[in-house]
Image 1 (spheres, helix red, strand yellow):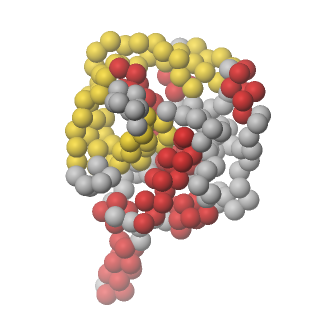
Image 2 (cartoon, one colour):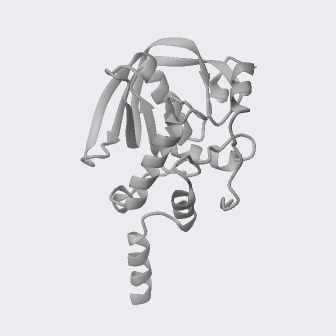
Length: 211
């Protein structure tokens, strides 16, 4: 019993798994972005919440900073990124708040989509993990989301509307193992995006842990 208790105690103090720590620590500031079909196992898995230890860990700080650098880098130039897209099945994403002055990126931890409502629009979407495709995707224009604030670690509930609400839905889907191509009415190849990607190296790093 004592041995079991000690094992559980040590496990509880472990912020991230060995594989997760390898991805976080070994990645450059510009992280490798998972893509179909090579990384289907990660992209199709449902992500798990961050526990109290993970929320207060140095690993989380490093991971979120690298995610932000990656989504803003010219090679990606996205409006959002979720942790599965950098190889970590945890409930974390960044969203460009296009509904706020300066369109800042903001980080959301352990988000929970409480409700969706309003008009359904069929708008164009793409994904850093599904290059070089685009598609028309039906999305609600209002959402209510609850999440852990990365600064205070308090739970916050917020209502978001318009295009920013669509970004939230796209990134939230990643945490559920769902991709926009699963919801799209139509899909097509975006040749201009394909040409842009030819200027950058998207190769998977040699140290990348498959399991």
